[in-house]
Amino acid sequence: MNILVLGKPGAGKGSVAEVIKEKTDIIHLSTGEIFRKEIAQKTELGILAKSFIDKGNLVPDEITNEIINSILKKDPSKSYLFDGYPRTVNQAVSLKKAMKALGMGLDGVFDLEITDELVIERLTSRRVCKKCSMIYNTRNHNPKVPGVCDNCGGEIIQRDDDKIDSIKARLVVYENQTKPLIEYYDSEKILYKVDGSKDAIDCYYSIMEILNAKK
Ligand code: ADP
Ligand code: ZN
Image (cartoon, rainbow, N blue to C red; front, side, top):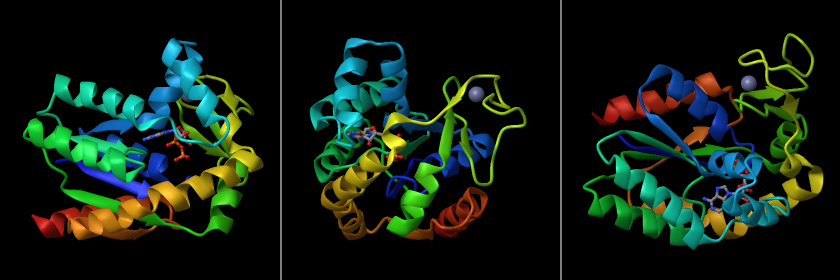
């Protein structure tokens, strides 16, 4: 089973993915996470990606497509949860081609819907663990010890792209480049809408209900 979560930045893709990952044996593929790991390790790819990411722009398609293709090629028999990829129609076309060549397919695309106001509210208060990427929030989900991850003891930080100017830029990028994917997957008849203003666990149940009904 391969599924994809779509939505504005802050729609909860990463949080829903964390729940799904905990409850199934699906592999979580987050291009944002992959880039952040590369940035932390100061690799060539990381340094290049950071120059796009901090401005709220997308990393070029060729780079992103190649990363995903090489992962899928290594193990096409596994189940994948795509989070933050594809983000452009060009990437979606590339993914379809790569999956087809490997005998893979998408079972469902879940669009987590939220308003821009909620995006800004969520992202300006979002904090993440530098080490394990666990997500926190200064409004309603603080670690037990301030600044220290409950899960791994790592340092909790604010992402550079969660500052207000980057958030606004990311919302524009979403409108122009990612939103067209909704129509793309709707025409492929695999698009399902989920209320992203709900908690991650509720989004998870909605997604599972839809997938079970398809069986
Ligand atoms: P969010 O969904 O909260 O914006 P992500 O962790 O998915 O965060 O992505 C962070 C940043 O990484 C994006 O704003 C973008 O610059 C870059 N990025 C992630 N995925 C892709 C992708 N598929 N294509 C191009 N750039 C990407
Ligand atoms: Zn941690």
